[in-house]
Length: 283
Image (cartoon, rainbow, N blue to C red; front, side, top):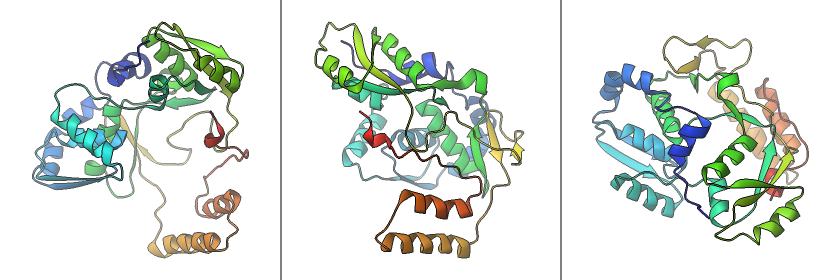
């Protein structure tokens, strides 16, 4: 049973369906300006061993930066990052589905949850453009089409198994999936997956980058949009938020509902659907 996944190849063929980076037009357009702002500069990346952080690093290393400092609590991840940067081969990006596949653990996947996706490379390029060319207060997002680019998690699960020459063995319960996972071997042609309707807190059925009433600039970049009128909080208000949160945590009577209520006062558009269940309760 094949468990190695070329994540860039799979992402391009099945998820983004793009042969080249979404950000290529903007990287070409602003190549000179990015070079002026990055060449010779010292760059600090916090959390650089993760997927987005590592690809951010790979994006800025196309320019002649003077010094790069990477910080992460994952020592093994930093070691792997150095190996990747020194290697001329493809990147091995760990993903939850792939990790479970390697351990022959059953999959658990929600149905009907739609999200926009960019490749690991595109995520790093997007963050680089935003951090170098964005202005204070800007919120920069990929300019994607809802009908063309939004995809469900269950579709990705099916596509990934197909990519590996497998098919989903759809299970009615988590227990059935666990039992079938024990029978997996090198000759298996199907893989146990428990598909379920999402019932966890805070899980929106679809993704949106901006809401009605926000000012959107679609002219500066080709493949990115920019929210220009995001609410800016003064330091006094930010201090007040943290003071209230500290008081709550020090009270010894902390609930998620109480935290949400404090945040909702300062973030009018903040919506949280509480169902009493979290992702850590899932298989």
